[in-house]
Length: 139
View 1: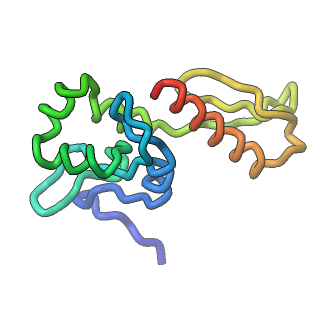
View 2: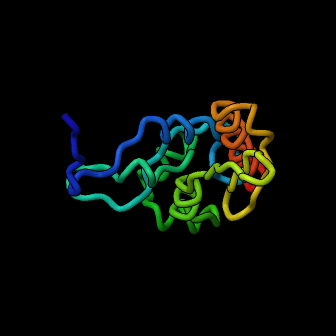
């Protein structure tokens, strides 16, 4: 039996949170290991959807809870919502029929991942690593 998600429930994804936890803290100059911090809007007694998570170290996560997102963003000159939105963008993979190569698209840029014979699993691994590399360049 297929389960349907209640539209009133926030989106949940352990895989996305695991990905966010692989990144460093979003605060400029802080190189500590990040944890997934929910920064999006939330309803009473519910945290924000997992797609609205940004990496913050424990120290900055606690500070965010004390001073609030708006003051935190101003203090560090960042936008946690924009960071969370960027992390939620999913890469896209397809096979070009003419060249028989895997093509990956990350944030509007296309990359040749390799010939189709490398297999889907390897192509997915390559695009995920490419996405992480692109996110580290910006951070």
